[in-house]
Image (cartoon, rainbow, N blue to C red; front, side, top):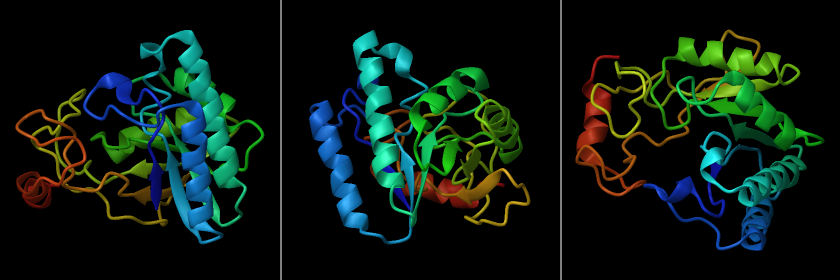
Length: 219
């Protein structure tokens, strides 16, 4: 499983700011992934948060995001061995209608497998299924995957940055019991910090004490 996370103007300058230096640089990044995968069987999650945070960008950059994500999904999904899912946020962020509109634009004419929900977040699997099903109904029945890496505990709605109470969720499986849910996946590596909040190190850095909390907190 791979996560393509390198759009220009990434994370609106927040904890995970950075990304490609230009649209052309981003396309080169995607081409590199395609060449590296080289027909191997792979799942790719495309650009966590990008569709959900579009409103922070000016109109020209929003259009670039749509074009670049479409390029990523089209190129990655051209490989029959690749299952490509574009990120669709989580139940506490944008409405299903808003996410569906973006997904329809990004996935049009591609061989994508669908979309992903709850990436790097803490919403319960039941809430994610309800949200994903609502999006699916607005996208022609697209399937989805759920990030269950940290949704097994008890986290207050809306908290997303190294919150207390989080725990490991359902281990990765394709046996979801739901025809729309292709898999439960650990997309966010448990133990990686969300950013320098609540005592954490920089975004993406491994944080041992938080990893241990995920293991020991009640599921």
